[in-house]
Image (tube, rainbow over all chains, first blue to last red):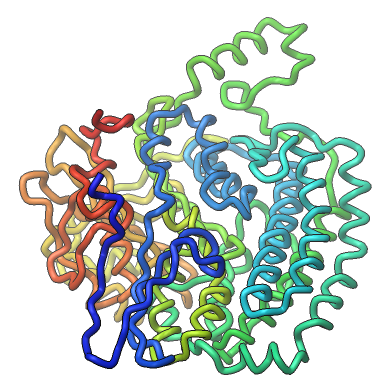
Length: 401
Length: 163
């Protein structure tokens, strides 16, 4: 069991420095990130992230599953935005299959994707503020998150591991309750964001702890592979929803918040603005929700309606075949990237023409963002490390996969 | 929707700046355009030069290294396909570079000198596939424990692991 010993081990380079082992159980490392810090007094002079504690081999598992069986695995990667992961995988496979997705399914996907983004940002805001010492915000954020989780439970039967999106659409039409709950949430959410902002935005302690802390430039962000709010906080004007639209995002009007400051405070303000923008996109999707089918007309890929199965022989046969043998996907390879709450989430899927993917690779947004951590921490105080980790919003499940 | 066949004819693809840029430097082995995605095959010894051209050339401007991954096509040879995913922010375009690496000597040049972002991506490929990146300053396992034997994403590694 030698591999249970934590490695690597860092030795102090000078007599006056010491090594501080932060994590993997440290509460502010958001999961199981281990940081090896070399500190000179209170100043960090070296920061080495050690990851892999949550590695479960999801990419390997995918190769042994049917295409439709991979969808629930994608939830487990990033447990704060399961729908975004479902969406990315489904889009990649749909691209291989060249499936056409009906507008209602696309709008449902956009609506739930944006609610998921709000959910993820709320957890980020709550825990980030908690790390820095503002306890109250956490309770406010989780109040709204609870409502969102109820909406997700309502629509998919699950609070966190939703697996609601399917290859070819979504798993079922949302129940009547869903529309009422979602409408109530969308209507009241902007005032709730005002409450969070009232607690933090002009709070002198918050500003003192975040402004000018953990600065990074746009060039460094691009060189280190950062994406999403981390890069936009430094002025990289790039949002996949706007610049490479997928699942119908070109039909929605929204602003991409941008900041040039590149510090923790800038990334905080940017994500709070994103909360408002996401709510606005969700409202547009809710109001413009078209009627029609929620899944593609592709009987060999999409499971038939329950009613049809009871009356039509073909539907029963297709259902049996999809469940027992899976469906084949034409040979080829695709990469699909979407804007997850943390940055560019991408799925590379290669098919060899059978019912199981030959290779599924997830491009993790956090893995790119984590590479910037050393740049953010070195030369700064130890207490700023906590602020820096919070500001890049990492989810270790996504990094380790 | 009718299934569109892949375009593999270099003459037809010449109008794409990435194809033209690599062809002018005679680095391109093969190119395909499928599912609206451009894939360029280059020799493994040319990968750094090809990336440098695609990044610096004003017609291509692929400034962002989005991803590095690998596919094991065991038992055929060359066994590994190292896949580089480049993105151009200004031109809103992606390109995929593939370099084939033989199983007998799985090594390829590191891109650390061009993009520091390659650090974790290359370590991940090294860890899970055993492809060595020559010139990487810290090529150690990243996901698996340091003393792990084997490379789990290789096709000859059982899904359940060795017992």
